[in-house]
Length: 415
Image (cartoon, rainbow, N blue to C red; front, side, top):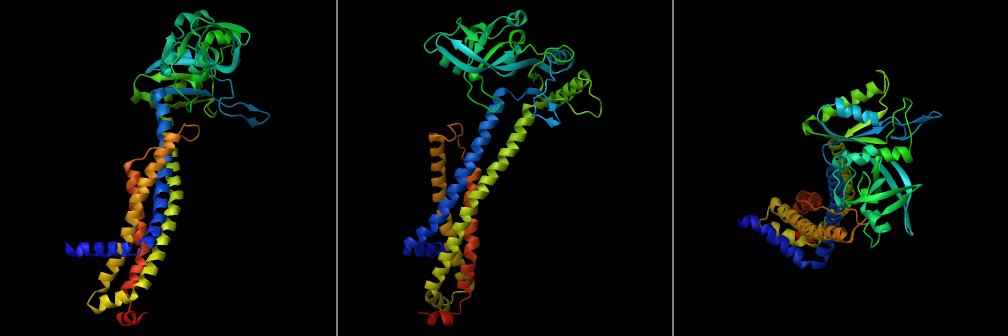
């Protein structure tokens, strides 16, 4: 036990004897470890935030987007073609098993006016199933009913931000607002869900899809069917999600009369697949941020090596005396390597504390408008500490080897 503790005791004496030099050596490692923890915690925070947003929509959600339009030989973005219809949604509901709810919808920007207040908002034409598909909650009033949908009623459900902007201090339920050239009655207010990668319902106004098709879009396909912007559906059995995607793809290809060599004019994607893709991408981003911060750790390691080389020069005579008294090369090598590891471990511990504090500060202050929080997990802390100590040992090896190989006679003569 004494042989194990003696190198640590000697390392502590060396650090305490040269406080300023040791502090400056540790500083580089502190900055490096703190940077690793802070940046990787931001990456983990981004990942957790996005996955949480996807899960809030429901892991059993499947979305179908129209394909891309091509004009003058130029292919547009996904969703630019009018290839999905309400009749497609009906066919999916009737013919594809394991589908709990099918919700076709269309969107159109409109100007909203109530009294002296006005705003631009995204109007979404929806079916009653839209609420189930996207896990929407109502705080006031009610959601669009089957009767509202079938009769093409001029009613609306508004988002939380629309309520705050148009109806400050006024109960919106039962009020009438002008939507473009039409008047609609507010029948409900949605619970605030905040911004997400799928868009925010807080800034939206929802009306029956039939009402939107009759008053705003009035768009039909070449076969006379009602065009929609997208179709959302929920899977009753999560294990059958891949099967549902396959069946939906086969059905739509048949309905759209696509030959075997023709690409799909739509895209089917499940939230489970999207979550997996996003998790992989953000995981890569986190590692990339950690690698960037690791450069600071390397710089700190070079500082350790530099200081240890200086320490070897200053303690040359001490090394000669120890060798003359019987110390072996292994003893000298162990002493300097332990001192290097001690410095790097101390710097790592302080860096963990600084990095944790910086991460908490970023979360409390907020970055990117407060949308991003940070997540400090144990594996990040262990990784940062391990890399810090590893760098200390790596960069301390050369000075330790140099000290161990000093000729004792020349070391004793050194002034």
